Image (cartoon, rainbow, N blue to C red; front, top):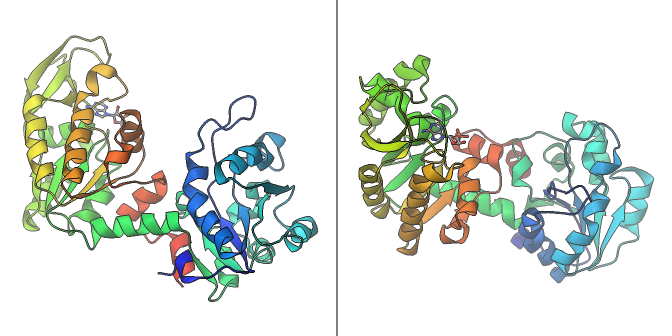
Length: 395
Ligand code: AMP
């Protein structure tokens, strides 16, 4: 795997695919600059080598050219975060863009206009990618969030840089983190999968069974497993047509020597409501009219023990309906367990959608080893798919 550390960018123009798809308020101000921060190390390395950085990104889902999606809105914030002046050009290809790049000097940063103002970007058009390729000497992909898309700037453009292409430090870190969990992790390896549905996690479970020693199942997925085993789940969320699949997963896990840990007790509620009446119930004996919305105390104790003896931990999906304060305790407790294991030397990766939101919301982001920045891309990696954006740089 080639990264920016394998190149010296002195007097070179780096064409860097970043993910500056940041949220804006109604005044077009950036409300969360995490993604710009995340790209900073790569950009600074290029500048410190004595090179210049041509940045390309998408913003939102424009239909043609729409000023509200112009990347000009984020120039000031990018300059603040990077601590250098950021120039801007109102197109990402063509004469205007080529002239702006030609005028750049070492140490300068140029941001190109939104790639998706051209429909060729998402179509992965080869001619468009070739035009982009004229804007740099070395191609750097540092956008994990779009690495699962075969778009012109994330994938196709790489073919025009035979040897002069590499991963930025953010994307490299993402790849290394997934690798640590799925291939080179210190044992025991534990995966915690929560969230609402078995159906959205099934491919992940099948793919990771060979790599893990323990599988903790929590959240709404629990009840499909419990019902399949003959338990009474009351009104809890359940995918009836996935019960056979759940039993199949349990069989496969047993065959591969993976220990499965399911909740034994849950916080039952008499409505899907933060103010519902609650009581701790046996997961296999939830009365009608009640539904499990969070993990119970015995369950959390069991999970804690498994987590603390793990050396590598993957966490995807909350243990309960964490959006409601009264059902967030299980997810928070799990966060504490993973933070403690991490402090004791375990490697922990949090990735994919809602668990990332939960980890940020409850303040665990800097207490775990790595929080993935790419929701869909992380999920596809965990499913064992080869991401086109990664393959294109490796080829
Ligand atoms: P996912 O996107 O599949 O990771 O699912 C995340 C969602 O699962 C969150 O919005 C949670 O509120 C929801 N969830 C977790 N536990 C439960 C549960 N016991 N019942 C219903 N929804 C749940």
